[in-house]
Image 1 (cartoon, rainbow, N blue to C red):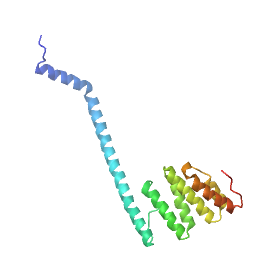
Image 2 (cartoon, one colour; image 1 turned 135 degrees about the vertical axis):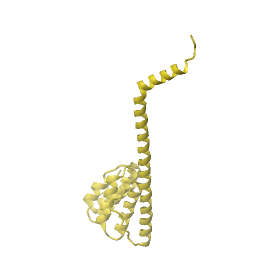
Image 3 (tube, rainbow, N blue to C red; image 1 turned 30 degrees about the horizontal axis):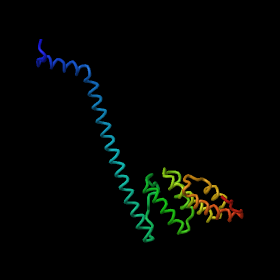
Image 4 (cartoon, rainbow, N blue to C red; image 1 turned 90 degrees about the vertical axis):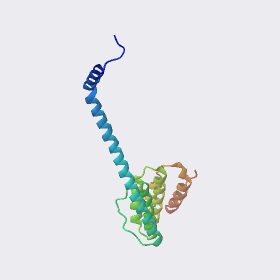
Length: 173
């Protein structure tokens, strides 16, 4: 008996293996290919969205510097550029005395960002806007929500201003 298989025997072994596992192999390769293509196109889409948002963010920065407002889409993308754009728009709205627009932008950031630092900054700014509108009770509710303890000195400073507006003595911490 020979240790080596003949060509016909090898061919028969391959045919039997393919008959047994061929469908599984084809389905696996197809699923893998579709998954990889889907991931590639998803990444391309996300990159394009980030690039477009970056361009809008630069335009927003330029418009704020030149004090010429641009028509920035109110459906801000839920990414870092969108969150920062909303903060910049809130700042510009405050400078123009449009507190409602500032509150809308700050609330949008609080609701959409996953970054706790950015969320806390937005909450502090929202409390300041409410205080400027003579709504110290609402401002106190906002400032009492803490996501990031590293902001405690700033939070306490704003809380003290709110308590002074409410004619309450700030608590010693």
